[in-house]
Length: 281
Figure 1 (tube, rainbow, N blue to C red):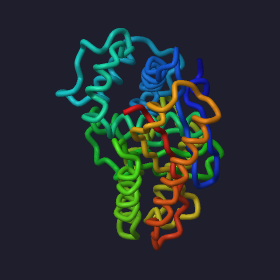
Figure 2 (cartoon, rainbow, N blue to C red):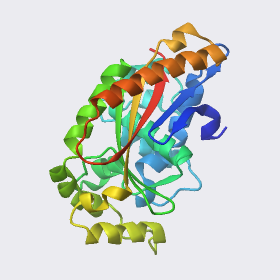
Figure 3 (cartoon, rainbow, N blue to C red):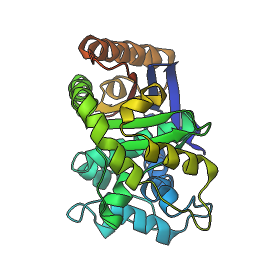
């Protein structure tokens, strides 16, 4: 199965996108979610810093997993040839490692549905390169080279709390001063080479970032995807993706979007995209 077979899109608006994962034998399809995460780990962790991997083997996945989990969380017992096979192990790390999982899911959604490329890879830089890290969870570009995506991710037990926290980050990370300071770490964490030659799209963005003195100069080319992954009761109320399931999810997600819009009074004209993904509690 490809990503779209597992991660289904429900609402697709310019500023609002919602996704869900279905059921298997009347239960939430944990296996597909876990495999989705594992199959996208290498691209997420290593990205263009190690090249786009066409053939992913166990060694690559092992390295990516070790980068994703902090030492106190990573446990070989839940790693078996690149697959997390025990649901309870997944649940036990779900909130201890919630930031990384939210970022991974946002990465997958951007790559799958918005057709983006990773410009920086925050986790790889954190664990392997030890350079100055930018203040955004995800830094992607569109394949047409016109748009810079600066993403934020939250994983919360309560969707409303998660959305409110996204707004706090939006107000803290997208001030004029913050935009001015962040262009340097983004530029420095963009690879200067890719094997023997940097791809044209990355080379173009690297040159643009080097010329600009602030991300504010790129404000008309920036989009802010903000994902809230949260626990939802719809997976307790339904055991199949029926029309009633979709209707309940849509009602729930629209209420969260209203909360987001009511609190979103940022003074800078940045284009935000609220992304929602519910999980069972």
